[in-house]
Amino acid sequence: MSSGPSAPTSSSPAAATVAVRQEASASSSLPSSSSSSNGLAKETQDQSANTSGIPTAPFITDVEEFLGGPDEPVASTLRKFQETVSKYKFMEVNTAQRKTVLEQKIPDIRDTLRMVEFLKLRKDDPNPVDTTFELNDTLYARATLENVETVNLWLGANVMLTYPIEEAITLLSAKLSGAEKSLQGAKADLEFLRDQITTMEVNTARVHNWDVKRRREKRLQDAKEAAVEKGQGR
Image (cartoon, rainbow, N blue to C red; front, top):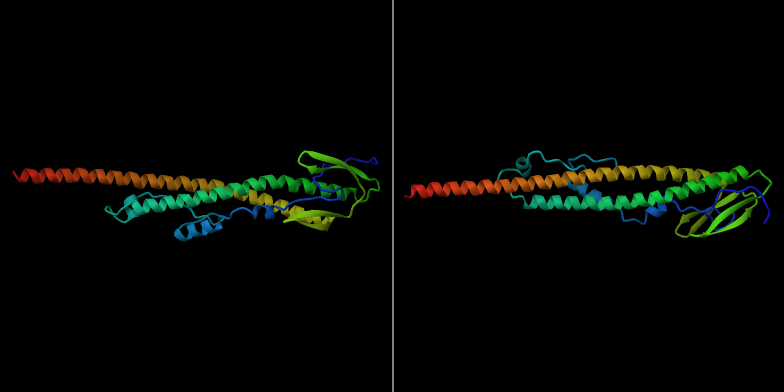
């Protein structure tokens, strides 16, 4: 092996190959929460939504007005509340999975971009460069790279394409920017979803407590009326 400057560690499967699995390909394998978001939005069309289209849960200030009267049953309302909470939680799980995938993929894309940029800087240097590339999770090998004009990028689904170095940098930069933006969106969605779950759980408690109070007052009223009728009958 000839000597030369040391390059950044590469996770490439071959000496002149730089591999990256794009974030879009990785996240596409996750179950989508869009169907749940759309279904929830249809049930709450009069409500606002966040930038991802997740509807805002209403906060019930007047339970009696919300139900439509003092004698309205609460069972169907409580059931709908539980269904809504379940949909929010389903979206929360999917969003958390998407966030985890992005947090794993962003460093890979960033490292690959750094390696390609290094190859660009070395393109006009006649001296070869020593590098380390990954063969397995815990196995690395040393190699010597001559000047390269192209790199091979994994696009996912066992697809690898060859790109000129400039195009590879443009592609990786766009993917990195998009992944970072998606990660910020996922974090915001998670915080938003947790707030909506809390709101719906508070609504459920308020309706339940209102119903308990209503039934207690009704029992007291029935007992009072029975006592009056009993006194009149004597």
